Length: 99
Image (cartoon, rainbow, N blue to C red; front, side, top):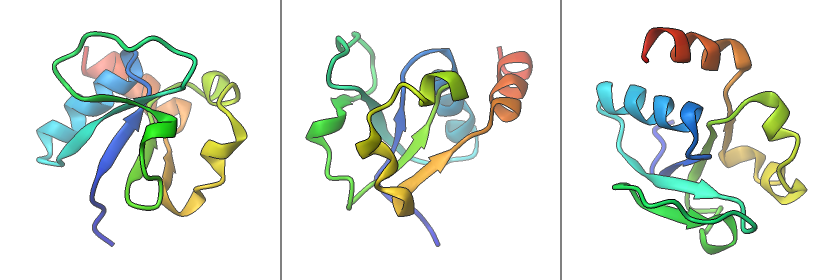
């Protein structure tokens, strides 16, 4: 199934590397999502708080380590049909090879 309205949850190093990878493959990313208790960073891409997106109408790709994924609110994992978790192995590979 082709996914639309793709957001990357997390705009740190892993999130930015995922963004660059998707861009290389021509996958359109709507922007980044951060937890409601975080401060929005100034970025060229769109950044939204988790509570401000319609999780039924978008796909979230977790762009963070497994240890940071454990810190996310449970409500993130309740959207399992629209949630893509990326393993630490893949994130490490991206960090090493796309830096």
